[in-house]
Image 1 (tube, chains in turn purple, yellow):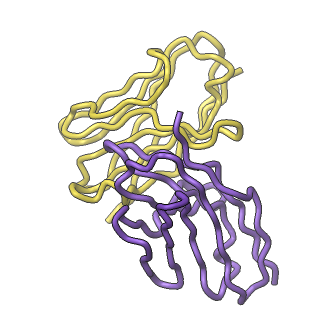
Image 2 (image 1 turned 45 degrees about the horizontal axis):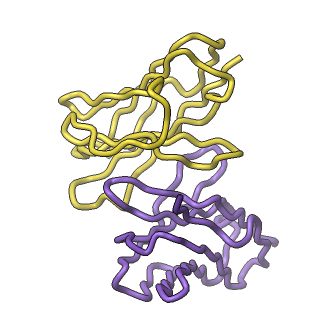
Image 3 (image 1 turned 180 degrees about the horizontal axis):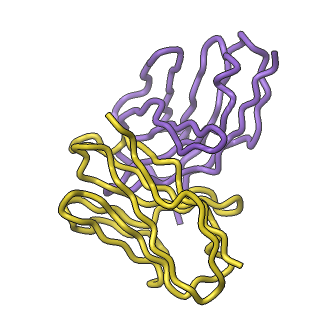
Length: 110
Length: 113
């Protein structure tokens, strides 16, 4: 079946550096792609989404890039902070259903 | 505005028993979704309800069922529990027209012994 997946399970980044988290997807018919953040002991938290007819969207310190040609999604976090340490999931939205990737654990080094 | 609440937060059951989990969405949200999260399978979609109607269902056996009430509160039930049902069960709600921005509760941690 089709699924959403992440390239790397873990990412270690120095505080203040930029982080890039990648995701490959296979369902080219998805309308939206979304990034969620999950901190320990909490449910996932919405970060940003991007519609399939866009290639870039910016939020506060975050940018999502969508490359439909190679079915690739990325999340860029600027000036990574200790509070950014969490598990990041990409997801695709279809028919009121979110399909999540496996997640990337981001650890911020002081 | 209060967030999504789930009860109970922790639950221990034995194989063969059944369990009912409850979710109260954010006030004004009419869509409620349920997900199962395990280390091996990650986050998997169970079902979604809107105005008491199930609009989509994931690939789970019929032992997993749910419903939504007129006040948008939702319950999910798992019958004949198996060891593999041990997981974090997450509920999420969203407002009309914002299905992508789902607000998740803290989850119910179910352990099946």
